[in-house]
Length: 244
Image (cartoon, rainbow, N blue to C red):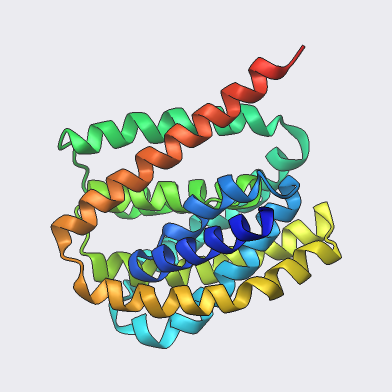
């Protein structure tokens, strides 16, 4: 049952990542945490996300906002080590609870047509939060997704810029994770077994991207954010309720 669950998680997450530019970590990480230890789930997520971003780089290069990309990377340079410190020192369930509440509140604001304007300082801030969440819980997507949704960014620009940013942030995060948290055979063997599902998901995701319009894309974004926020909230609260 765990094997089937793992296959379905990777397949659906790969489809989302390829078609939207943000789906893999948001969907995969919470469910991988049900099967693997935290460090294992995060590193499997990082490895497979790297595969997807690397494979798509040539297809999406024309959609990249390089100015924004540079600011995201600069911001993440500060957020990545902070996130690793959180992973090593602070209760992860408390972080999950805080992240879930932030995601849910901001998503409701977006649904109620709250909008923000994009500027350089906000690019840096979003990149920082994204880097922090990558090394701490393996989920860089929520800050970027909330930001792009709030600024009504076109789906092509969103996908292109986030995928290339992930290529950087996932690689650095993986190196940091391996150095400070270690790695093991389970992570690399599981990632290898998942590759066929990743490739199948990429093929289906590319076809879906061509068919989805901007309005449907935005609604889909809100649904993914709400599901992620609710799942993290339930998971973190459930852990607290089981404590003696």
